Length: 354
Image (cartoon, rainbow, N blue to C red; front, side):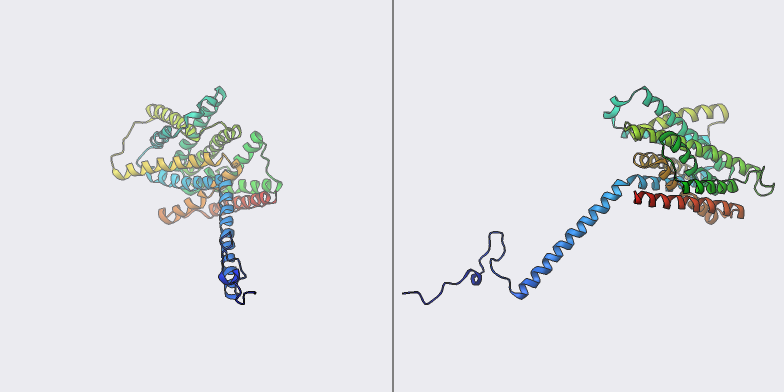
């Protein structure tokens, strides 16, 4: 005789399936809650994937972050050089920052030492000479010229970076970049106000001397960056070893020049000591940022990012020093900054298209 009472079904009992869920149809309320939970999980996964994608893009272009740091540090280097100028000679400031730069010795990766050869040694020495010369001429330029004008020339790297990048690494600028570089050069010419073009009275003779020193500095800066970029192509360098060699060259060169030309004057005022120390740290960060940035980015890109120091130093000169530049300078600096920005934006667009 068949049993009149049916056994409870699995759906009624709510037996669990092997994967942990209910092995029965979901009720309407349960189905809605399940869909909401599923959408939340998918949303979390989507946000996680988006965050990972953004992080990968940032890490892929981390050289740009280093270049940006170099630009900010360059502006503060010029500011503190201006603050220390009246009490501490430029060569002595160079000695202090070279001593700080030498401390990179403790961060060198000695495991890579066997990969170096005599050619690498030559490049190391050239890097130190060019970097030391760039620093000396920058400090001399600040001593004679206005800090804003000096930085607008010394930190305007697109022109020499483009020339060296084209000659040494076949990193050719686009046609639109060539036009912008010509306009950039016109802006620099207006900023420097050479006496053979501008009549006397526009700027004092010492200001043009400072601008001329800044011109030498920007060429030397482009040269030491070209050496750093050369190492990046060969994939056989340690950034901190480069900085250590540069510090040793700076210590040797500044010591000889100080002994021959001027007397040593040790700072005794705590305020001056802190100013000199900060100047040295900012100078080291500027070199570090540029060198690390050149490991993954072109000279052209790093040169553009360093140009951010131009408006920063003009802001300091106008607000804190109280020196308002001549309208000629405003026009030239604006032309340089605008063309540099246009070069950067067109570079980004061309990179995205490729």
